[in-house]
Image (cartoon, rainbow, N blue to C red; front, side, top):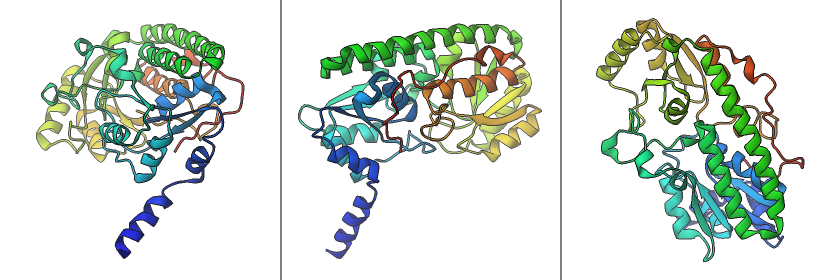
Length: 331
C-alpha cells in the first residue's frame, strides 16, 4: 500500500500547472486538443490559434520514437476532444494510451497516415523495410506539412463550425507562407553545386525533403534500434563518405554524437551538429519557436554548409500567422 501511494503521488507530480489549467477549464467553450511532437503542435496552433486549448505531449529534446507517456498524459487524453499524432508508427505508446483513455466521442487523428499512401512510404537506414515501419518525418517536406495543416483545419471545422472562418483564414495565411517557402527552397537549392546536394545525417529525418528538392540521402548514423552504429556500419559509412565526396555530415543539436565526430575526422568531411528533427528553435513563445522557424534554421544550415546561398530566407516570416497571444502549452 505504501508503494502504491508513493507511485500515485509521483505520477500526480508529473502534472505541471499548465496541464492542470487545461483540465480545470474544460467547461469553457473551446476544444481541447492534444498533440505529440512540437512541429505538429506548432502547425495545429497556427490553425487553431487561441480558439482552442492546445497541449503538446512529447517534450522537446526527447526521442519521440521511444517516448513513454505518463499517467498524467492519460488524464489529459481522457479530457481531450481531439488527439493529433503524426502516425506512421512514430508514437505507438501514445497511440495505445489514447485508444485506452480517450473519452467516448474523442477523436484520434493520425496525420501521416492520411497524408500519404503506403505506396509513398520511404524506408532507409534508420527505418529498414524489414521493420515494416516507414520513415515518419513527413514534416521536413513543407508541402506535406501543408497537407497536415489542411487535415487539421478540416477536422477543427467539423468539431467547431462556429469558428470555421477563423480556422480557414489561419490556414490560408499558413498556406501562403508555406507555398512561398517551397519556392525559396527551390531557388536556394539551385544555388548549390549538384555534386554537393548530398545529405548524411545523424537520424534519417530528411528523406521526404530530399525527394522533393533533389537531394541525395547518403545515409544516417543512428541505426533502426536507435543505438550507436556498429564498427562495421561505421567503416561502411566512412568509405561511402569518401567515395561520394560528401563535404559535410550533419548531426542533431539535441543528440550529441561522439561517433559522428570520429566519422568526420576519419572521412575528412566537416561535421556540423546543429540540425533539429522535431525540436523547435528558440524559447517557448519566442518568434522563432514555430514549425516555420524550425524549417528556416535547418535550411539555412544545410544550404550554407553545402556551398549554396541561404540569403533567400532572410526576410521570410517564421512567427505564428494569427495575431492573438499564443495559448498553446509546449511541454
